[in-house]
Image (tube, rainbow, N blue to C red; front, side, top):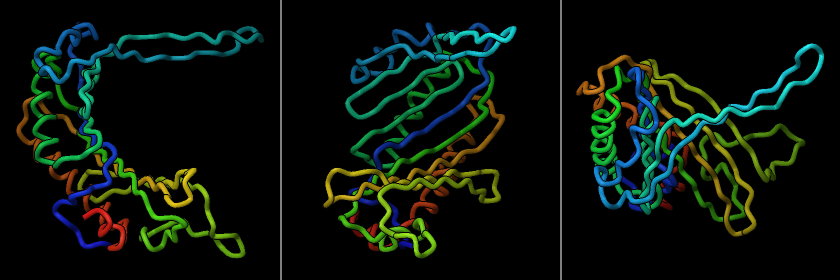
Length: 244
């Protein structure tokens, strides 16, 4: 495993996501999240409604029925050049896109926007807190994955080890009510000089807390530490040195 660092100057983070799921208050609908651009700030000038689409099909009296689609408005999304925030009837999501800055800045902005969400939606409680970091490593090709990953895909001989694409997904539990989902994926590349490797870490906790509970910040910090532990345990020192 790699030696943990406090901060990587050129962190390979494609997207950093802070997410809160809530128990909605009766009467709240998607329209209450429209027209918030001025409150969020002038940089959030791009906005659009969000919809969920449910497809249904089946068999009735021996004959196929459908398919039919049911579309429902669930919220609004606001964008800047480097961030996306979702205000939904069932929760709030803040995504920081490339280039990544720092945890302090990302959490600070997410916290500011969350307070606006609470004032608008007045949710009854928080039911889930999550931190998800999607890292896209660009390795020099052709790459021997064992030089970059501590637990790469290993195939039994005589199967060729020259893998073009793979996807692994595991769910782990640190024993502190904070499961984490780790996805490793080797993506196809048209450039033989670059091997794109995805390292996706999603750490979360199921909770039942008031929307203004001060302990939420501590939960986010716990999940951030768990995410960092998994990242540095998953890659080699050689990998981390590429992004210092």
